[in-house]
Image 1 (cartoon, rainbow, N blue to C red):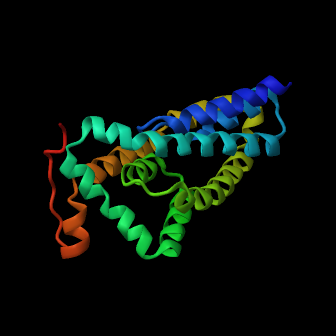
Image 2: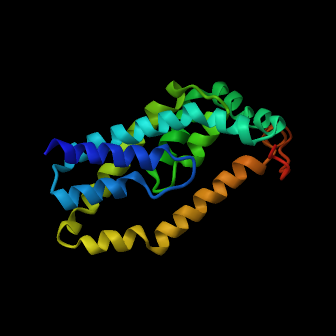
Amino acid sequence: MWWQYVLVFLGALFFDIVPFPFPPAFTIMMFFQIIFQLNIWLVIVIGVAGSVLGRYILLLYAPILAKMYLKESKNNDIQILREKMRENVWKGQMIILAYSLLPLPTTPLFLGAGISKIKAKYIIPAFIIGKFTSDTIALFAGAYAVENTQTIIDNTFSWKSALSLVFGLILIFCLFVIDWRTLIHSKKLILNFKIWK
């Protein structure tokens, strides 16, 4: 049924549009694939499309959130990330690709890119490759769960999932409190907790 694939798309979109670490989108893709016994390749393609759209929308509205909630000095500080990306686009693309291949939340990556107003063309292509690869591995590795749905539910709420959430929150914390300009230019780590308006 086509509406089941729409659920895959909307689930992946929702999981990757939120501005805080959420379970990886492949968990909802895997859930629907198992429950409805969907074609795994269609789930991957449609789910990745939903994830990419979600992350693109996050890129677009992250600057609005930053302007509403962060001090202007913190917004300006995060802009240094855009400057570093422009210096070496290929190196930046490789970092994004490597990060997207890891089973870590990409929310901090996209929040930082959105706030620093990095253009989507510098981040989305590498993300698509990494996301497609990592989700394919995750879904095929989880194919055994067709016979054991409880395993997926247990893994979604496991210590690994909790650790991934904590790590994502730490990355967001670092994005906001590290003085990036000083770190990149002077190689000194300075934390600034006065970031809110």
